[in-house]
Image (cartoon, rainbow, N blue to C red):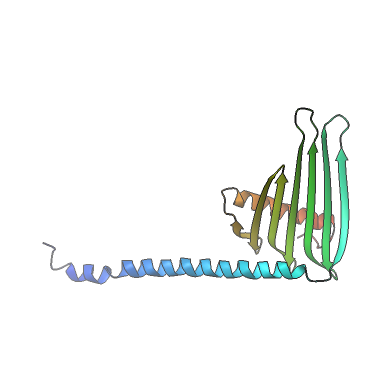
Length: 177
């Protein structure tokens, strides 16, 4: 038998747990919906860039080591709207001509910017017949989401943020912070 003196306090406290749970559930679902809306907006913006007449600046670096069986070629394209950076496309070709196995890896990484902020990175990797596609979405220099989601998404997103800053400094498109 419960003590009748504490029964009113138990009755008053009991409804708070479901209410707290429902509030937290609502906040989580609302936050996820906002993130999905932001991702949809970012994707639409990135698609619209392909319809625009942007200035293109290209740079190519090729590295061949005489003692090595490895060749590396990096092609970087910057898409500019007047003086505003909109996209950096970096293609990396890696050829290993080792006699035991010849391997070619081709990676295309697209960095999309809006108001000088990185908003999306799309990366495609082609190795032999295998293809891998990953998209990272950013807001205020923080990972918003990755598709497909994986354990490596967060560390790779930090690498991509660093690479983005390096490329921007290298091409002096946007002053380094």
